[in-house]
Image 1 (cartoon, protein in one colour):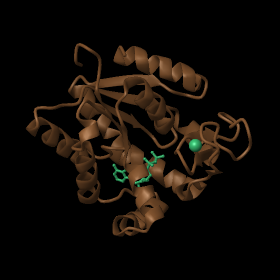
Image 2 (tube, protein in one colour; image 1 turned 180 degrees about the horizontal axis):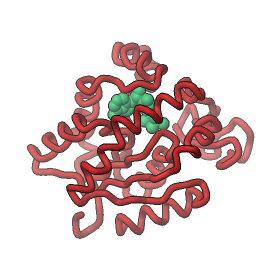
Image 3 (cartoon, protein in one colour; image 1 turned 135 degrees about the horizontal axis):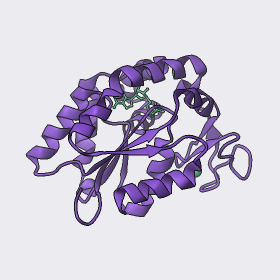
Image 4 (cartoon, helix red, strand yellow; image 1 turned 90 degrees about the horizontal axis):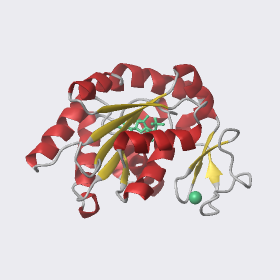
Length: 222
Ligand code: ADP
Ligand code: ZN
């Protein structure tokens, strides 16, 4: 980690572990943009682009979008000017191939990853969390019907936008996404542990989003 605290950060965790919620808080606190490959794909689906059409089938089945596609999109995004002083990756990398590509790309520019936050949540809790998830159509803020309810049902506290349930948040797709995470993404834990970058955060429901955020700041010394 760098002296003045981490800047280039990866958020790792199963679907439903709270990456999006914590990314929104962290990006505000650290002043670096959150880069979510899932959000990039959803925006492309909403706009009906070729990329959106390609990604939608994989996403609806809970499968990974092919590495070549994701890697090109993600690396291009972190080369943008607003990522010069740091970025917070949410949902990328998700495979060892993606992690290697990211590593090589950053190294070539004399950059690197400063810290990898692993949001640790027991598997049994994930399905319950995701099936109650609601997302703001306008600003992307994340809620839960019982755990993190908005002040007014169906409306975003931050921007009054309409809340909706994501297409891939149905139980069958969720189970597949968790399985895909365990097979493809969980190995990244060891990958970043070997590189002395892994910061484990207990993020089960008992902790609550505020306590998880406090632990993240402590881990990052931010
Ligand atoms: P969650 O973390 O809750 O699964 P995301 O928004 O990060 O939600 O991802 C939704 C879907 O987008 C994934 O199930 C996958 O199909 C696709 N996706 C997002 N990021 C990646 C990635 N890095 N590699 C492959 N597929 C991805
Ligand atoms: Zn909103």
